[in-house]
Length: 210
Image (tube, rainbow, N blue to C red; front, side, top):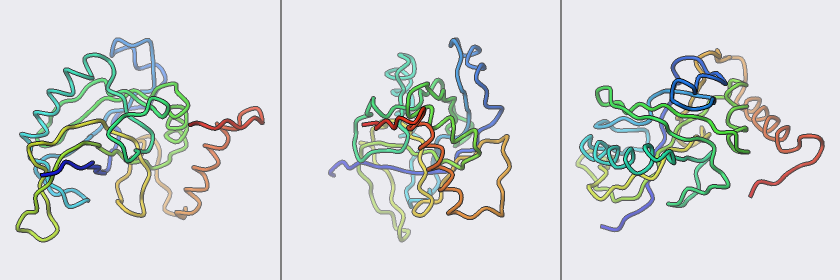
């Protein structure tokens, strides 16, 4: 089977408070830390894919050894159609992953990079965000119509923070902020644009992030 880029979305609900200083308990000088479910094994996700737990467990062991333990488990703000993590767009670093049943949970530090600062501002504004896994592999269609299973050749690349509600419906929402049912989708995304513009155009000088 030919390997393809496999991107999946799911809801990520942070647990605990989001602070600027609680990184110290992870052996860091400080940081904006969030915890939550990164991925789920053995069940059909919103993209009609099933990840066998044995495959995700294998990839998590590899990811921890090669990336987390070396403090380079980086991810991007929005994902590209690429199998390479672009350092120009890095927004966060995964500090820890662990299993609770079929849920893969993680601790993530938002970095003080241009993309990380945008991500942090979106969190603080109560914008709903999603979490997206990125990997390479092949899939096999199961007997159930519209359901495919990720195969043994799957390789995990990273997790990205994303916002793509029109297609996938998977979001992330800071626990300390209540969702307002009176706001329209248009207003929410106008607010996203305003936040990003205010960061990129600080002091009246717009900067282009490439």
